[in-house]
Length: 429
Image 1 (cartoon, helix red, strand yellow):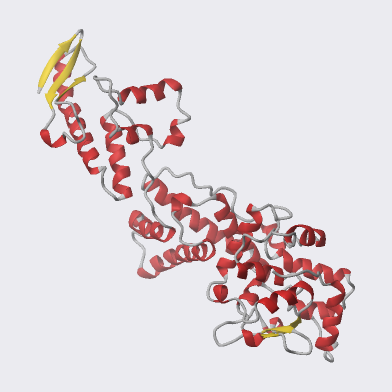
Image 2 (cartoon, rainbow, N blue to C red; image 1 turned 90 degrees about the vertical axis):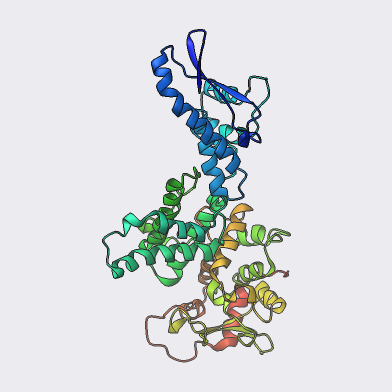
């Protein structure tokens, strides 16, 4: 290792080892030690050389296919140039002089650009691809301190809510790469919980536990792995009043927006059918996904659906067991899908995410408080405005009457006639 005085500053001069020829075209390097003291230069030189070697080693390793290795390599390369690795989006916020300093680092003495180091210096290294389920596995490995001292039972009770939150999220939006998650994905999960709260009479606290645990898993992995992701996890938790939010779509919105020509054309056939089928039936989405050919009775004198439990699926409660006459556009839906919706039979949670995401992205939500489930409330409101008897309304919605029942409530034919008065008509598909 040779120290050379240039002007009033000491420099390190040393030949580049042959093994680094593929990443460092110079035969020897000259590096300013930024001091006019030989004693200080002698102390600094070994560390500077070690940093250079580490950078070259990192550039060799940077050809790895492993995204995590590439990111660690980028950090090492940036450090070898006296910089901290920052993703490109963060560099945009730096003062101009700092940006120019990074560009100057890449310029070699012969005027060429160090293309190998450029991604690390300019923050363009691809973020490692890690799915949500893989992030959970990383989370366990990264947070042993959080279960230290816990008994086996305490550890299980600590882990299970996090497993449940991640499992529910994947059921709704899919096992996507964490870096590709959007605000819409998290809002879809929130909407799914709003629907569950309305359907199962849960409290917002049930949803908030999932939302908080999911955010903890993803943020912890992001921070502890140094991924520098911009996860849009803000303002997701529900307020206590959110439980009561049951906002219906207006009839005009249903007819002029949801049923406008081509409005739902980009949605997959089964999701579109379930959504439109809800207009004149008010069924719960989970009830629709469980329908099979024997429960869709089109050849009956009064075409109708039978909502009931089966060996593989429960319904909410005893009052949810009911028959719903098919009228208007909902009848047309089931003529097109007489065997039900096999795509969603085993994964009903993904239906909500698919529909809510599509409606939101295509401007088909009447407000930011509306969700797919709002169509069920639209049906209920239409029956109320149509002066349909309370007992019939409650039976068709699957709600308890709150008093002793007498008689048959008018029978299926009578109910069909009442619904025909308020049904929204249309062709499907």
